[in-house]
Image (cartoon, rainbow, N blue to C red):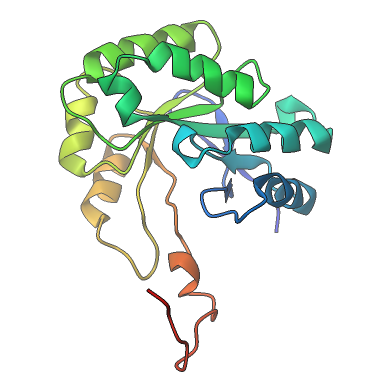
Length: 204
C-alpha cells in the first residue's frame, strides 16, 4: 500500500489519503506515533482534547522525518471557543507539536454562536501560513451549513464506515460542495477487522 498517495483539497493542499489517529493510541502515544511513521504513515491526526499533542510532537522530532513530508492534523476544542481562548490554544498546539504550521485544523465538535469569531481567528492563522487548511469534526449537516456561513470549509470529519453509514447525506452534501471527507473509525473500532468473535466477553 502506498501511504503517500494523496488527495488535493479544495484549496490546493495535498493530503495523504491514509492517516493514523492517536485518539485511542493506548498508554504510550509517542510509541504508537513512532510505529505509524516507521510503517509509512505521513498523516498523523491528534487533538487538544486527546491530551497527547506533546507526545506526537516528540515522536515526529525523534523520527527525523522532514516536516515537509508530513501532514499534521489537530483540533480546536469547542470549550476554547466558548472561553474565547482560540488564539492561545492554537499557539499551544503548534508548540506541543513542535512545528511552525498545522496542515489541517479542525473545530472539534460544534458550538453555536461563536463561529464568526473563531473563523476570523483561524483565517488570520491561515493568512500567516500557520494553518494550511480548515475543517470541522463531528458536525451534522445542519451544523456544517451553519459554520459555512462564515468561511470556506476544506474538510469535514465524520464517524463513517461500511458498518456505520448514518452520515450519508453529509457525505453527499460535502461532495456537491467540494469539501473533502476524512472519516474516522473506518474499521468500526475493530468490528470490521475480525477482532471480536462470537464468544467475545465485554466489560462495562
